[in-house]
Length: 264
Image (cartoon, rainbow, N blue to C red; front, top):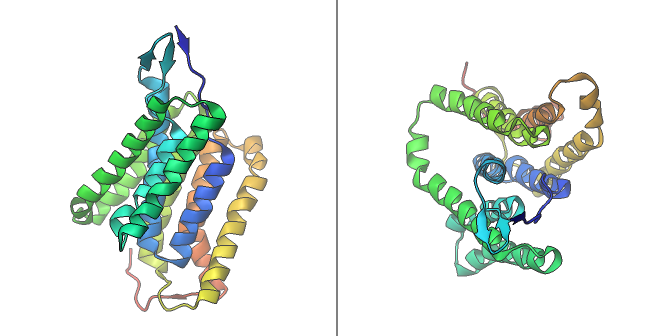
């Protein structure tokens, strides 16, 4: 029986770059809580998609074995489905549904991706978002120390499962860097976005996005001196988005901190 080769083992790098820029832009220029949530959830979904394709048996479809999900579709679905509960009207809901639908059609037409794998990616991505919103009150009521421990242990657990494929360690790396960074930012930095003009928000987006592109332009440097370069790159990207950019924006006086910061 033949296994269908429907996607590159590692999702297209350009797709991850686009996601990081968009999700980072939300964190720096729109709303920190929303930016962190959609970033963490989308990267978590990518990690889960690859765990599924690596370790869970396939669909039997005639003489082919089809994966239960498609990582790129699952990631795109998770990202856009996150905004459906935040939509203000039916038009916004439709706009959230169009990109995953178009992306799915393009994959079917251009790459011959099986509809079953695409349907699996849509269902799993949607279920991850649904589970997040259903448990939001419970997560919000969890003691802060538990949240910090969870944000560290979960990426390490995912990394242990994905470890045979080093290229995929970038995802738990991003989760780990993001969890640590957002915790430090909320305690010590407290960047204030709400009182800033569109011009300053654009400057913040430009600085943050340029840094992400620079990381990808110099990622070969990690290969020379660290044992897990992809994991290290992921941690660096997560820290850049959630703590290093806020610090830089405050030092450059683009943004100001909130009036009070909690002590550790």
